Length: 372
Image (cartoon, rainbow, N blue to C red; front, side, top):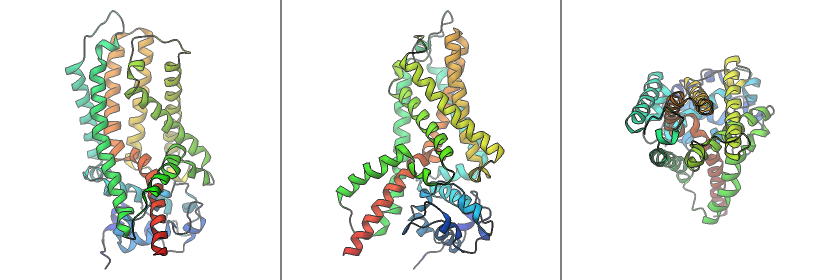
């Protein structure tokens, strides 16, 4: 017996699917979508699940994450139901369901929670730096003394362990909903291993399905710039901190300085493109912006600007400005990581490739069921 959730559609609507009630299931959206495939059709099927309140079917679906929001379905919808917007709202809804803490639901549904959570983390970070910073040397820029590496590295370790634990638990819940609930048999270990590299790693590093979208090339490039720019700076900030946070004034051609400059530029270009597009509403995916979209872009941009500011003041030889900017920078970095990685926008970097991985596992289960 199907357990119906009467308010399911309304819950999804609140996350951005404002026009979906206009849908009368003609199927144009599914027919036109370049990413919809046999046995993994969308968006029509998912809209029907939402309309009848079948939350379990939605939780078991990986298809919401197979959509890259190219907007072709919305542009061709004869009823103006905005199926692409529905798919985005559905991804937000699923993010709240995967999160075992329940915080994601609060974050997506309340601007007050967004503001107070970010403000609290900012102030807490600044206060911790105030308590534990080293000597404030004003005769020259001595960032290593002001922010001792062993303390910063300890903070890195704590944040990584906590965030990884939350995100991995959420991914397991996603796996349980989408794969384990199928109850069709057991998947060979070799399949898990093969698809881990063939599917998960491939799509995590390339996002190549985006290129199947008719107008996806430019968005793909900007997305890749953000992903690799962020990943590069993350690696330097966590694993190569002793090379990056140093008092040494590297020449412009130094590999560390050059690499971090390129990564910062990539992040700046990608985030600027996203902000400009949402202001101008120059594509289907940017016609509507949820408050959390702006929250993410704003935090990311402030993190980039203050990070660049640290370098500028350091090379100008202004100690106090460097220390203050460094403190403000970490004040933005912490909420960006703590709020976005496990609970909000940034989590899709994990959920999407894992959804493709779990889709392959589900296909393997279906084949096993047919053979038996």
